[in-house]
Image (cartoon, rainbow, N blue to C red; front, side):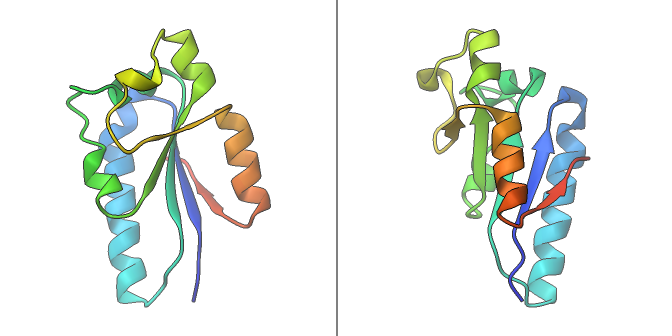
Amino acid sequence: IIMDVIFHIDESSKWPVVFGNIKNYLKTAQDQNVSGQVELLINGDPIVQAKAGSDIALSELTALGIEVAVCNNAMRSHAITAADLQPGLTVVPAGVFELAKRQHEGFAYIKP
């Protein structure tokens, strides 16, 4: 079975929940022999935790092959540049467009 999923975070208080959801999803997917793409989209205030030096280590996710996408509009509104980001992140033009595009491509949408 192939199943693609996009997780979405737009509230900084939800970091522990989104990490837990992703870890639970990955474990169960492995147990059920399910493969597919997994992506996390960050927009809104949590964009500040995508900066290098943050206490949120997104390398934990990228090391697992998860694409971590960050919204350029949110970056701009928080005066964050690509050079400010943790390594391995993907900048997308607009988070809302990325969510719609991925859902159109058949990704399941999960927002904790």
